[in-house]
Amino acid sequence: MEEGLVQALKLAMGCCAPVASVRPTIDEVVKQLEENRPRNRSALYSPTETRSEIGTPF
Picture (spheres, one colour):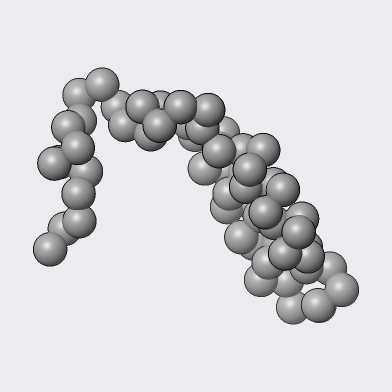
């Protein structure tokens, strides 16, 4: 899961590039996100966390 977070952070940093021509297009962003998303949703949660523990902090 850490690798996915690193990839998402790199993608986000690319989207913030000061030079517009260096930024990825929306199509490139969508493609990257789709390629890097977890294959099954249970991979989003650690075995020790419950859904209620992961909910919103408010």
